Image 1 (tube, rainbow, N blue to C red):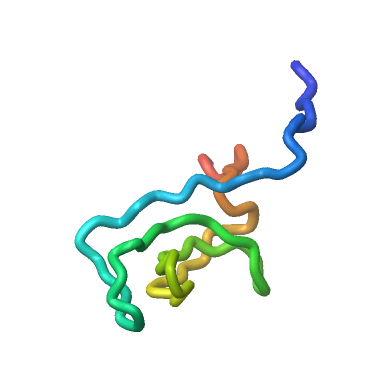
Image 2: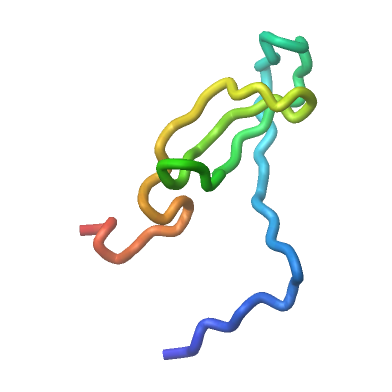
Length: 74
């Protein structure tokens, strides 16, 4: 089994996925993206406006966010 190495980068970034055919109800921007965040209560999958940061949707993402464990597949 190979050891898991620590990242060399000083900062880690999450991949943000653009949402098509959606607009912000606050600022009317179409710059909407979905991604995982760590907040109070654990990990969440969010859909947010990237211009004014209005949350359009927020769903629990599981105990470890985007990572899955072996027990998740049972």
